[in-house]
Length: 268
Image 1 (cartoon, rainbow, N blue to C red):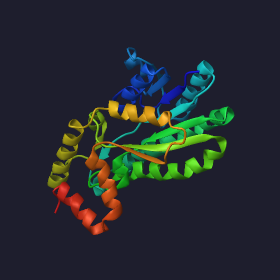
Image 2: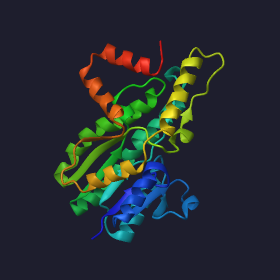
Image 3: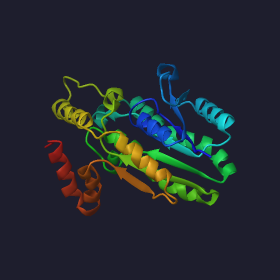
Image 4: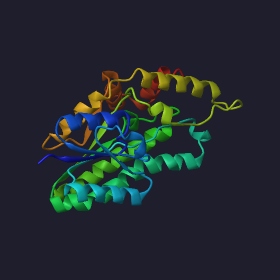
């Protein structure tokens, strides 16, 4: 029987690329969006789901199980970017980002585990970020929310292994998607002490996304993981130097690594 896959945030960007690739490989795919009516031409079904709204999560999971009788793979892809000096980002925006990037995936996982236990099988893939492995200037909140999801996955996967359910992290680097347009940007305040360094860093971040890799690379990586008998705890997908930055953080003294990052972002 064909595997049934749920992809949160499946209407655009990486999620859309993953869904379209899996459809071609014979999977039954359901994506989600807060506004599914906008995606009537999608190659796979798009259901209404907001990761901050537990009721919409439960309804979507129920719809899929009612339709297909099972749910084999869940890809927690929905996420939100956020930039700005930590000092100047409003607390409500920090909390909102964690609601989407951290609590949202946890709510999805909690909603699908009963069905996966019943099946005695399942795979949950949490899409995090290479940024989650390090505190990046003016992306500190994003790094923290994605890093939190990486860490909780390490614990979660050990708790559910006894039910024959696998869980893994996939950390992408920069991909050519519309994520920059959907980020929360703390405003460039005229009298802010961070105005110039934050503005310069923001331009650099946007340039990295614009020059990012093809999202199909992520789709192929996800397909390979789904077909792996015993997935690893962590996967990184991106340009060599983006992945190598994690290795450098592991082997270099903290102050030297910090200096490398500051030089990269042209910070004093």
